[in-house]
Amino acid sequence: MKNRLRVLRAEREWSQADLAQRLEVSRQSVNAIETGKFDPSLPLAFKLARLFGTTIEEIFEEEKAAN
Amino acid sequence: MSPHVGSPARYRAEDRTLFVFVPLVLLFLIMQFSLSHFHLHPAGALAVLCAAMGASPMIAMILNIGLYLAEEKDEFQKSLFVQSILWGLGVTACVATSWLALGMFIHVPHMNFVLGEFLFLAGMIISGAVTRWRYK
Image (cartoon, rainbow over all chains, first blue to last red; front, top):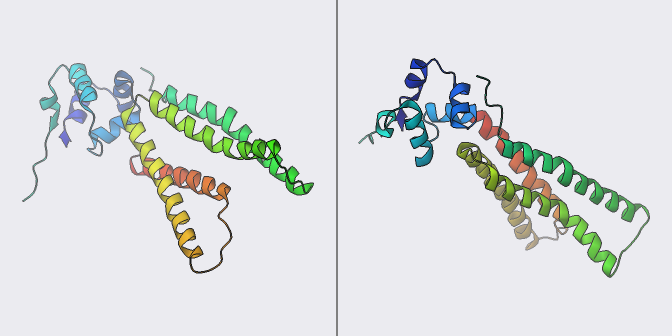
């Protein structure tokens, strides 16, 4: 799943560690979500949306299947 | 803002490993050494006690794993841990199955339960390190 986390984080000049602390997760978790290696659960996605003052759809985008 | 250093659940699990699991392993090793050094063959209640001491490190480890999974709030860390448990179980099951299959055709010694514990922990630790490295 693609996401805009890196952009949103950069706009606020937050490091991955800063975001991790705000979300109460590890920095490794933030990195894994940012790079698309791990899809967060719905509660964590809502937490991210609330933190950035936006919606889940504005942060995450479904990758289209290549046919 | 200071970085989020680590999960409290992980620290608690590490403490339990250090103060419960490790002493139980040491007790078991001391018991094993004493039995073999003095050529003792416990029977009755003492045999049950020795067996319980042998099983206690693994039981403690399983309880520790369960407590960690219940306490860990970081879903990504939890998923990494579950992956490493599955690898540990997979390695143990593969070796045990192969060993038993081999026993159907040739005479092989009984698989020691300590080997099972060792394989599980080794599989878990190695796969845990590899998985964490992949997501670094």
